[in-house]
Image (cartoon, rainbow, N blue to C red; front, side, top):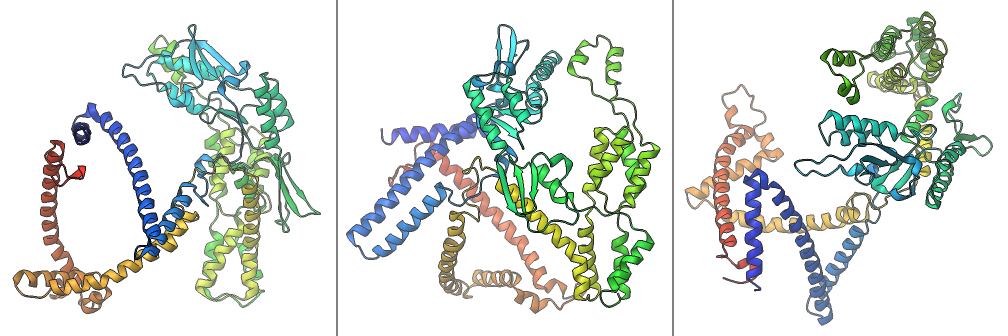
Length: 610
């Protein structure tokens, strides 16, 4: 039995893997076999590690010659094992950290009844047996001819559930369920239920209004406890020192409810975690983007710069003019806002398509638009012109003015932000100018400081905001990151202990390799001469010596074929042909050996000499 069972396992698994490779319907068999292989490999690793500890401890206990090396091996093994399994020093995975959100543990069963949505319908069955998407499996059920969804359905869940069955009737049912399951303000967009994590999550600052709205949904003690946990986490105050503020600093109006600055203590404070969007907006909020500069403004800037030091040379003057001229065009911004204001075709919903009984009704549903076109009016165009000529005005202030003086929809606001996301700040433009002027000549210290001081202030403020972002975040999955990141203890041991020792070992082996090569390359016969010449060409092609020897030969010369790099390419043709022949032989050997193992003819893997 000791031999029969391993032989049967080997034969069955081998046949399954072969079948999964060549038979499409058996592909899943190979995946299952691979999972079992991983399980057995994990057990083998455990047995191997245990055996290593056992053997090294025996050497240390018996004080055999060289037992000190056994002690070093054992200590190194245990250190690497501890730091790898414990993920000591490894950073959590960013994609699992939910930056800007607070979590409170909550089971699906503890959600209030008021968050349960019901529509008529049942879960369809797939002919291929595919189960429901995992994203909705915990929250969706059918009861007494009704689809029941617990919690608030997300757009991703809606998309995956709609794709589960490619029928308009089913997709219409999913649409109704999605609309019925949506939360009302202020909950909508601020709180969500993550069934995969069995947690209630709130985004950013949790106001008293939001907390009261959640409690008003009803629910048991577990629900109220989760809401209180979110409220505490969403109002937790975090501060960082901010001794220097940007010129003309003011907190954006949308952030005044949760962001504050203590002028006496010189501290920036936030309540609750900081979302990534808030971090990015705050980091650039007090640094205006580049505005178009007239020829007169560019000349005035140059005069101010030259007054701080020596005059610019011709090349520097051209660089200054080129850098300061790079900006956005007012007319392009107006066109972009007008294009965003145009009505767009609205895709008909599955319910509308299902209700369209005729082709004409279907075409009418498809012809729907989002509304009338909204072009900028005369006052809004004047606002854009005023913004272009006022470097101190921010994009948010322009958006407020455009909303105040006429219709300005969300698509136009998004187009405005997208337009200026690609535009650098004036501090970044001045830094670019400093680098281009230094490449073209020299600058006085005062001139250099004038050009880079704004960027230094911007970087300092970005560091303050980044520090507040990190400090306000509460780590949710500390073990989620990879164990072998450079910052981890395992990565440090591998990089600064294992690799140097490995390099030392191979550096010692190089002397043996050189000795063996000398014996092998002695030109005793034709084969040895071919080996010597080929190896010499390849070795020279990998070193700078080969370039020095023949690099002086021009490519147009008749001697060009004898350049080392050309000789290497020529020899590589024969090497490729030879290596392919060897690989074919290896493949045949692997196939024949595998058949011997599968048929039980070769039993060497069982630890015997048969």
